[in-house]
Every structure is written in structure tokens, then in C-alpha cells.
Amino acid sequence: MTRDAIVTNPTVEVRMKLIGKCSQDAKTYNLSTVSEVIAIIVGDLDPSLDGYREDISFNVEKNIDTGARHSISLHEYLSFRIHERFTEISTFLYAKRLFQQFLVDGYTMVESGRLLYIRTHQQSLHCGSYRGLFDALTCGEIEPGTQGRRIVLPFSFTGGARYMVQNYQDAMAICAWIGYPNIFITFTFIYTVEFQKRGLPHAHILLFIDRVDVITFSNDIDSIISAEIPSKDNDLEYYTVVGEFMIHDPCSVANNKSPCMVKGRCSKHFPKKFMESSVVDCNGYPIYRCRDDGHTILKSGVELDNRFVVPHNRYLLLKYRAHINVEWCNQSRSIKYLFKYVNKGNDRVTAQFYKSSNSEDIGEVIDEIGMYYDCRYISPCQAVWRLFSYDIQFRNPSVERLSFHLPNEQSIVFYDDLFVETVLERTTIKNSMFLAWFEANKRYPKARELTYREMHNCFVWKRKEREWQPRRRGFAIGRMFYVPPGIGEIFYRRCLLNLVRGPISFEEIHTIDGIQYSSFRDACYARGLICDEKEYIDAIVEASHWSTASALRRLFVTLLTSNSLCKPEKVWDVVWPHLCDDVEYNH
Image 1 (cartoon, rainbow, N blue to C red):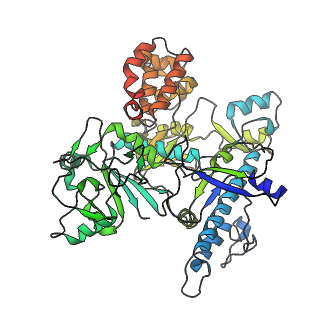
Image 2 (cartoon, rainbow, N blue to C red):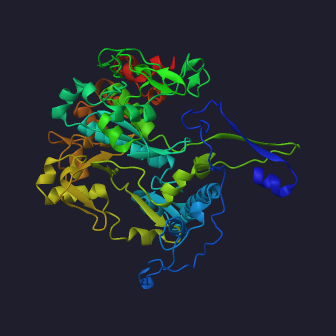
């Protein structure tokens, strides 16, 4: 790495060049458009910071005998230092660009410390199935180090790849339960909060309108969304804020050197066409009313008309006085791309280090943590947002993830210094969320009316007690983890769990009309779920609700090459619209 080259030869001249054109995702690897101090992470960092010690005690006495921490963390120390206080003058807050550097340096130290913990402690954790541990015990393999697998970067780590995927699928679960969202808001001021290279963070907000009111609003989009310049004489305040926040910069013929110009055309499709009324095209994308009424606004020395107005809502614009893009999105073809955009992950840059003298290339080992770093771009606003522990994800209603497994295949997490027989003696080892569902069905008549996915509507999983209890308030949506068709019996188990209500045992799940089938696949066949390749068709259709068309095509090719399909032409006739969903936009 570059740091090692500098240590080896301190006199070497090393520079960093940010590359604007690259073959990767332009929304993630684009260049910064603002002048600010940022951090670009290209590898592991030393999680230490001048001025912080691990023995700084809390101001309030805590009972350390209970295992609670008695000293503050680096995260808490930095959050304390960057707060403004009336009783003291903070040097940090008035240091301008040095303050920005302090923020990005501090946050990278905090995050590196967390990743270092994951890297060093996950080696001591193993995850294996109950049956696998029991078989190992009977065969005499009682050393836990021979069992399980290493978990590198779990979905509990905020911002990681698994974290983003799980939040994306949770969002799609809400969509499947309630229906498609109606309004998509991009709020550049401060709920998924995204940090781009433009100086300010912004929030992506998806709103669902009550189904009773959807038809009324869809027939009158103009009552919610405006893409026109108001009259300067009749509404001067509204006219002023539209001109300040909601006008696209001059581009195309007016300014062919604008940053939005790509191959001679505006990447944001400005200027728009004049339209007398708002309509939704055949692909589900709205075309807003944009009349040629003669209203103009002067921006950067150019007179711009309605064709350069970004769609917005008058009430929100006047209330918050910020760039707030409001779009109508109640169409199926655009939904999954909206959710993918909302959870696309951290911003990055493509950087190249070079020096004047020749040197040997230094190889590097790539792992999940290294992939997470991958030239991450951390801005000062992102650093302070995360140091203050503000939310970056919010959804309502909540989505609860449901685990399931085959008989005696529940996952067990254990430390590598425990013997297998000790792990198997745990009293809670057979009380998984899925097995506790059987017990709830025995205890509560209401539970017998629900499928596994519907349990969270009326019941709550108590993790500490390891049991399901009736819900007293609130509401939640259940989501079973996705399983691909090629995984085997667990896939067919999941298919049955979407239909079977209130079973009290594994056997009852694959019992159809009084006949107990020997496998879950046979039970699916008896229910008519897998005749005529239906299981593969259902799998692709289900995945189409949250997956991109390119991923669906890879899934279809995998099914073809693995000889899983007896009549692939029948599957193609049904699923080809999902596989080709993005063709007209990419070609």
C-alpha cells in the first residue's frame, strides 16, 4: 500500500488522483462537487486518537459489578467534544477546515475500532446446526474449533452489505403487505439518510397513501406535485423559494459544460417537454404538467421557463425552504428500483496512487471488511451525523425477520472455548423462534389461524423468554428469509409455510388431507405448488419484487445450466417480462 511505500522511502513523492470516469456504478463512484475535507479509507486504520484514553471514567458512578462499562468509549468521547456548550468555548467548532478534518478522522477511528472488534472476535465464535454438533459429539469430535464457520461482517453492522440488503428486503416486505408506495421524496437538507459528495446529506422518504384515497390523488397529481414556476405577482414568496431551490441549473443548449451533461445530453433529462396536464406513461413513470405560460426565472444569467422546474410540493417547500424533490411513484415497474436506490450504500471514489520512482507492487488480501472499505468516501456531515448517533434508517410499520429450519437444523452460536457437550446441554437450545411457533400454536387458539409469516401481526417474539406472546399493542409485518430453489428441502419448507396455518409439529406441515408425505417436496407437489415447474416460476416471480432484472437473468441461467428445469420454455413464457424489465433502459 501507499503508506508502506512512504514508510520504506520517506523521500518518495506520492500523490493521489481521483478518477472521474470509471466502469463502476456512477451514483456510488462519482466525484465530489464541493470543496471540503474528507477521508478516503483504503484499508484498516489504527483505531486510536490523540487526547482519548480508555480509562476516562463516567461522570456518574456506575455499578461495575454487574458487568456495565465504567469508562467512556471513543464514540462517546467524540460526541461530547463536538457538542456546543454555552459554558465553554470550543476550539474545535471554530477551526473551520481543521474541524472538518477532526470530524472525519474521529469517525474513521470509531468505525475502524468496531471493524477491528469484528475481525478479532468473530474468530472466537462458531455457528453450527444442532444435528451437526450432535453428530460430532457421537463421533468423538468434541473440540468446538472443528465445527461451524467464521462470520466476517454481519448484517448488524450499520452500513455493511448485509445490512443494506436486509433493509432493502424489509422495505419490499412492507410493499408486498400494504401495496406500492405513492410518493417518493428526496429531501436535501438534513427515511434513509444518504451522504453524497455535494456538501449536505439528504433523506429519501417513501410514503404510502391510504388505499381509500389513492384513486383520488392519482387522478389529481397536480394537487400534490407541481413542476411549474408560480406567478411572481400573485405569490412572491413561493416564486422566490422555487427560484432558489427547485430550478435545475442551465444546461443543454444554454450551457453544454454543465456537470449534468453526458455525451451532449442532460443526464437528468432537462429541459422537459411542455405538457398541459400530468399523465403516467405505460412504463409507470409520471410526466408532470408543464405549461408554456410565459413564467420565467433568471438563474446564472439565463432566463429559464417551466421546463427546468424540479417537481415539488408547495407546502413542504415553503415550510422547510430546502431542495425537496417530490415524485409520484405508484407503479409496479419503478418500485424496486426506488427501493434499491434508497439502500444503495455508502459513497465511494475511484482513486489512484502514483509516485515518481518505480517500486514493486505490494499485494493485498481482500476480505469482506476490505471490500467494505474499498475507498469509502466519508464527508464531515456524515461523520458528525454518525457520531451523534442519528438514525439513518426508519420504517413504519416495523418488519420482523423470521428464521426457519429443517428438523434439528437450527443454528447455534457458541464460543470456541466451549466443548460440544456443554453447548448441547443448554436449556434453550431447542427453543428457536421456529420451534416456539409450534408451542404457541398449542397454547393459543388465535395462533392456529395464522401462517408463520402472519404471526407478528398478533403476537410478539420475546427473545429473552424464547417464546411467542400475544401482542398487546402495535403492529408488525413478518418476513421470512429468502431461500433460492436450488437449496433443496428448506426451499419447499418455505413454500409450505406460506400456506400452512397453526401446525404443532414438523410432520403436520407436510401432511396433506390426512396423508403424511415423506418429504416437503412431495407435500408441495400434492398441494399443486410444483407441477409444471411452478416452484421455479414462483421463485423468480417472488424475487422480481425486490431483485433487479440482471440478477433474475443470472438466476434463470443457473437453473438452465444445473438442469433443474424439465421444460424451460414453459418457465420462459411466464417469467420473460421480469427478466427483460430493464432492457429498454440499458439498450
